[in-house]
Image 1: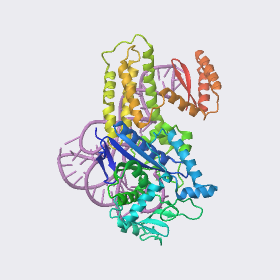
Image 2: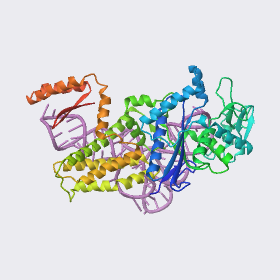
Image 3: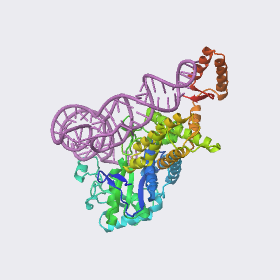
Image 4: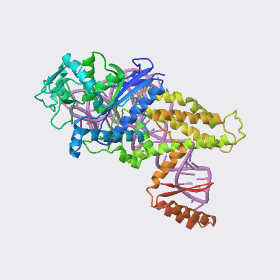
Length: 493
RNA sequence: GGCGCGUUAUCCAAGAGGCUAGGAGCCGGUCUGCAAAACCGUUAACGUCGGUUCGAAUCCGACACGCGCCUCCA
């Protein structure tokens, strides 16, 4: 078992070797809490959630830090708009973020620090940077002098001259170099402020991550994650700050997730083409959204659309239906007294056994390869098919190799733990999805049941014209009848 | 303009020199009064042009198209 991760810094997959054997430190940039989260945030959350879960599964003692940026221009702006203070806004959206992430089934990080709780750490780093000549004070602000850090832009592979040629950077009077960025901003009237050696003010955006990661993970740690759009400037600036202040390597592995697109275009606030997590969860089950995110590799872009979400839902239902069938068998057998020990397996049984035997090695191989969840899901689906085939084949026989079925069921649960799936019982989940769809129809279940009885009577009397009329009528209302040997049930189409 | 990424069948999506990915769909079958649902089976692909190689979706080069970052962004 050898985990390989794609490191943005090298542009290659590298063997993951933690700083301290058996431990892993991971810092992921959280959100600026000034609005509800959109599904881009959901993706970043889910991606690093499964990375966190898989590292734990692989046996590492993981410290996972994900911050809240709770002081920022955008928070202040919103507070001004609403005529309230920044804290009210920040706290409101921290709560909303927590609710959304809980809905999506994210495991809680080890620590979730807030920038405003780490002002003294921030000031400490800025002081160190000034002492080492990497930063300078200018009219109450403090700036990082990028020219003093030769490795600047080493993560994104750019150079300063080209960046300036872009000509979209304005030269501020206060800055010595146009690319210099603020570590500390002197407060304007009416803005929140903290005391500092340079006067009252607040931290710049990038410095908080340097301070909080050092506080909880040390000067050098294993994994730093975030969205692709954070590579420059945010992560580049973090490197300059942390390595400038500490004089040692900051991060060993840089991991960046791809975007969520709408019609092949990046979804973003500035483009206005975004969906909030809340909106999407009104329509789709949270696990469907998670499954959709896991169906592509975390570095690739994914296109958010109704069709893609519906496909994800179909796929997830397929797995859940199989799990429900397995549960049913296990349940029945545990109540029956005379379970025969089965020594030989049929052809389909042997194929199923093979899939079960291969399950974990193949699942681990996929996840070891830079957390390839899409490939891992393929392993699940192949096992589902083998299981379905086996169950269909063996239905008439009174004896089942119970241990094989139990093992398969356990493996799905184990993989589900890593992927954050299948936490609810299959029967409950399928029922929940059905109930959610039930809101979309305009008939009561009493009416439906009455029609089903009428149809059954018509069928018994071989009045198929009438029975088909009823079936078509229900279908017009989006209700699909499911006939089986045990009678008729219904579904929302 | 600079830097980077991508292009796989009808759609979504893994793979990265020879080994069935997978899902949704289509089609066929089982079931059914007929259907539906479910399950089973099946189908098809590697942007274009060159090169390397016994062998290329996979490596190299050029081109085309799409996208991202370079400004707050997950």
